[in-house]
Length: 238
Image (cartoon, rainbow, N blue to C red):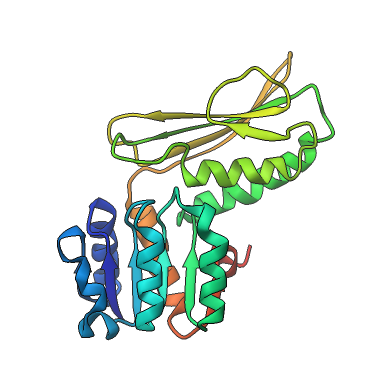
């Protein structure tokens, strides 16, 4: 498979290594210095594009993929206020779009566990619940896209929580999402349920970026011959 990488930072390099190890070809690497390549004939030859850039550039990059007729896998977080719009554009143009806030298989299992835990905790008001996440100092958005996904899933299932904030408010109806940026931490997420008597936690800790890159390549392989909008649940069938 011929792959174009949009965003050639640390994650882009991990994806390149993972893709090559699986026998794929990287035909183009696009970064700030050659963003014009998204309009090139070479880019149009890509069979899948992988987009890992910044919240301010993701929307335009994805549209460039649609305009070139190139299926795109996006893992950029912090721009999802426009996600519904890009999904609608994808369907109208009959293109292919795969988005995930986290491509780790383990994290997507965590999403499933978090939803079930929230359903149970809705019945036990003595437990307060919060989310904490730690990432490397280079991560531009806070909270992480993964933490936001976890928070939104909780809000849909726990009636006493009506909103979330990226701080500790002390209010029972507000879900606290606490963010730290530390060293080169690939990503740690913890959901904590605390009562006056005990604490129940579920968590996921990424040991390196390879776990995300592997999932991205799996997603690229998955959409290779498809049209439409897809997510990790479609890939993993969980």
